[in-house]
Image (cartoon, rainbow, N blue to C red; front, top):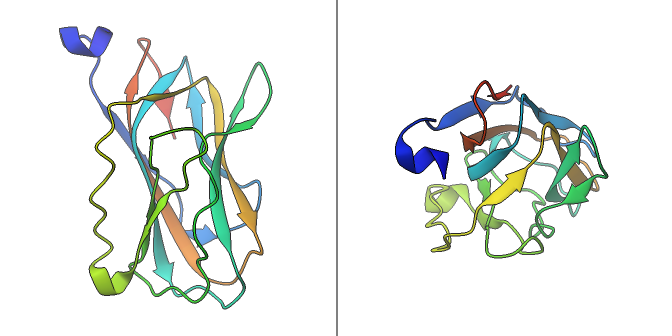
Length: 150
């Protein structure tokens, strides 16, 4: 793989802080595919009381949209500082939710899987959106020179 040779380095990006809304573009990938190292959503202001969940989806420039996580546990009423972290065990595995009371510190799955997404967008799949706000962060390996994620 290119990253093993030191040719391409790890990249990172941060989204704007906003309410969780179904179909929102979290990140735009240009110039080629990426391997996701980590993807995490951080609650910035407390969520409402609806039974809200999040999934992550890839919407490639060429091809069809596909979710690459299961739905999270309910985010109803979670406090600021709660985190939702992609668990790369399988494309259907629910993200790990860690409450603010536990420092929002996920251990992370001990899995060597990489989720490869093509140029396009990473979007949210939200059930029962509420009023809390979230920020999303991603660490990735570009799989081609010149790849950007914003």
